[in-house]
Image 1 (tube, rainbow, N blue to C red):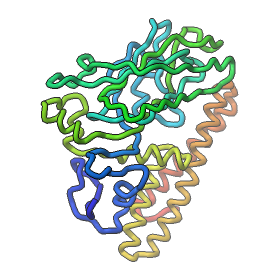
Image 2: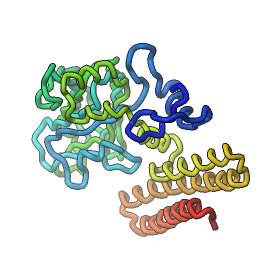
Image 3: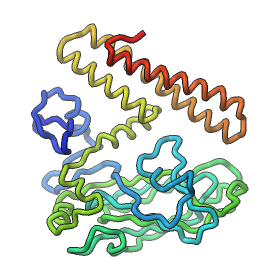
Image 4: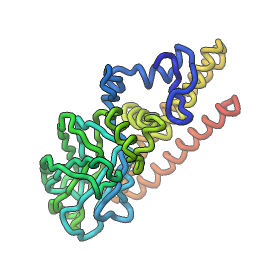
Length: 327
């Protein structure tokens, strides 16, 4: 704020920028998404980044790390076959947070019957570790048995600003399903929305709790990837395509500032074509996954050729921007 650019080196705005800087508009002045609450020391209204620091088990093809930066096609986390219940997952946040909303999207086949929610805080002068945190049980939600339908249920839990540094989810045994022969449970996506409490996080830092992820606070909070994934969902594109579009759009903005309108027009056309390719790619990827799920491998093979062609075109467009020409 105050005319400083959010193009980060170490995390905090560190150099002056033009008043028309797109980073100011997108990061600091986007009302309702990122707002500095007066005097309270909190950044509000955002999806909070987290790290999975504990899980009782995981399937080889669906590790818990899939929950860190989920995509439309991410398989999420699944427990190991024939696990003991409940299965626990613990998330660590980047300091002290206040959670408003928790959204949990269950797997379509490995549907848990019940999910218990607990939040944890680190006692004073204790290491920032989930094993030393004191957890408070908040309650549970139930997931419906979707029978043989290929449906995913999302539970939205309003936590009304509960304060914590860790979130623990205890997952009960699954509903029966013909495609869940090994009694697994799975979560495709976990979305935690709320505030980063900078005042409380600073206190944690001063008390020496600078371990697990807390050091991020000394560099500031970089939400660029959060914007990428949010924009990807809104635009119906993959994160990689969104990154390419954003890069070219920034070059177009630079050309406008330099009043190089021929270049701005050229880049505007590239942005449009990249956006079109990105949406077509995301749609083709979804249809390919559906074809594989229904064992229509001929259709899946044809769609793979389509997705490969669209990826190649996106790379060609990006390379052309860097060379200053596009065929």
